[in-house]
Length: 259
Image (cartoon, rainbow, N blue to C red; front, side, top):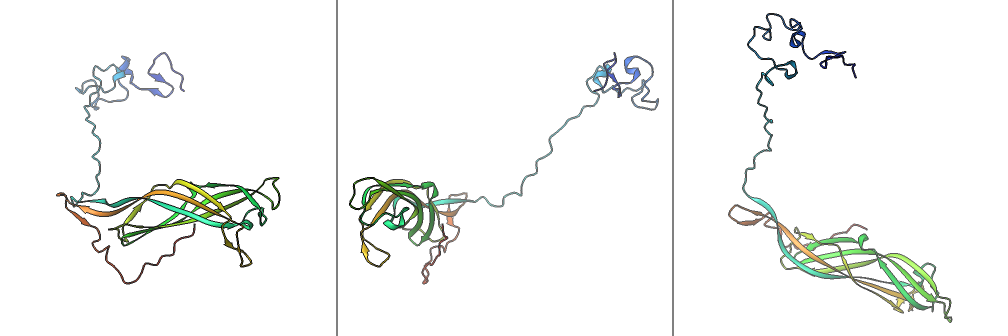
């Protein structure tokens, strides 16, 4: 900062006003030809220079006009029309042999309890629409913990775990749905978890064994099918694609992405 002298408007960088503004002689900044000389009728524009007016210039500042996007050439709007909405259930299940767990559960063991912890946030879903039908396939990650006792014993109770995913699928009849429609589906909600030891399964040797556990999870959600339509100013509605529901002789074939 500069060092200020007794004159509050003077500093090492000069004065904001001339000497004449302080009553100290002629204005050294303006000659006689200047419109700001003593004979000029123009008023001084510096308030601190003892001018009677705040400003000699009357400026009317206006905000620049905002540049708008190109004007719309239609009074129609594009909206999503609801074809229908249904509450549905999905069932995820699989049967696991004792050998799938870590450590492997010995054949003939007695199952004490089975704890299944699903990871709903990690669900993978793939949804496709056929005419009048919605097909939904997915996987839900789970951690399974089995408590058991070895064959011929009652103690100690041992544990084995398995982290895997249960597949689920559901095809829901949906009259009016067409392949180019869109599906809105909220997160899945758990409704029930079931475990059934002793379910028959074909073992690694090709023989049927009951050393296995069936895991079943019931899920609930809502499927809403929507369709893009054009609405005019009079409320008239027309489909964006009027041929979206035309049938084809070739069945839909789709390889869904891996989770």
